[in-house]
Length: 162
Image 1 (tube, rainbow, N blue to C red):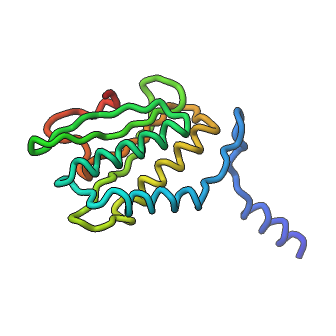
Image 2 (image 1 turned 180 degrees about the horizontal axis):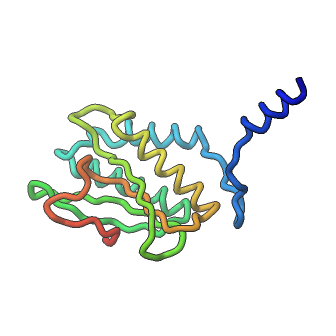
């Protein structure tokens, strides 16, 4: 019986090593995440490509939250049908060629509030920013809030530069 308990214990324990350097990241804050989703779904409606002013206000909100978390934040301008939009990019960790890009779009389909398309994704990006701000990653990370669900538009390559 003891052998079975020891075997069960050995098999069910995580095998990942402890983080070798730096502090452990804090947990995501569910209340803060709910606030971000609520703000995006209530304060910037409608939030689709036909309402660039609302998307611009949403971009400023996201920019400010990324900056509050300690990210190096830039805008990447894009154009679609003679309208201008901005992707919001926050950088964490060391500079270099190697990097991880995590993204979510902050526009919505038609005039829907878009909690699941994609305010929740952007809220998650903002929470990642807080985690990376408190415990910088060992490799460069770019968190990108795309203005339009299709990402880069009209041949403007994504470079992370505004």
